[in-house]
Image (cartoon, rainbow, N blue to C red; front, side, top):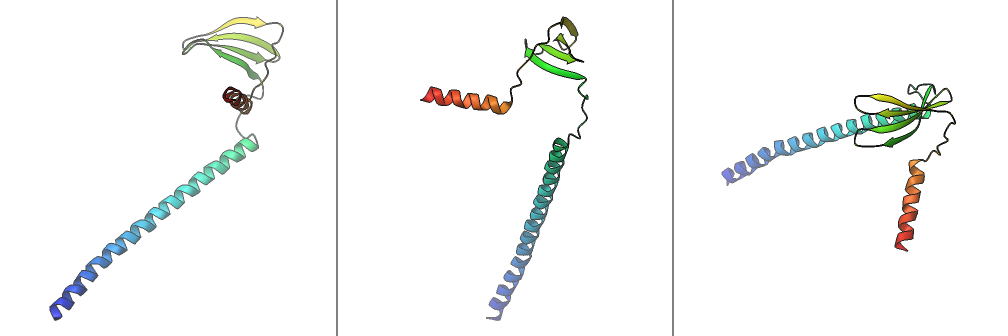
Length: 129
């Protein structure tokens, strides 16, 4: 009877470290996840502050890309505005060429992603109706 009691105590004491190891792993994982969320939170807060207060360096309005039209996989035509004058440039991976200097400035309606998304959703709703 005493050997049964000793065997039972030995098996219970052998399981106790496994439970302690498991709880250590859980607490370690929770600590790592908490740290990850804190770091991600700091990154998002700093990104918001930079965008909100325009802290990112800019070209001070000296160069303004008015429009870009892709011609191929790596080729495009760019309409660039410098000090109120517009230039049409051809851009390839190896070269940038002046195509023309535009005498009468071209006004391009700025279209945001939100407006394009609304138009796409409206077109989808019209097609399904």
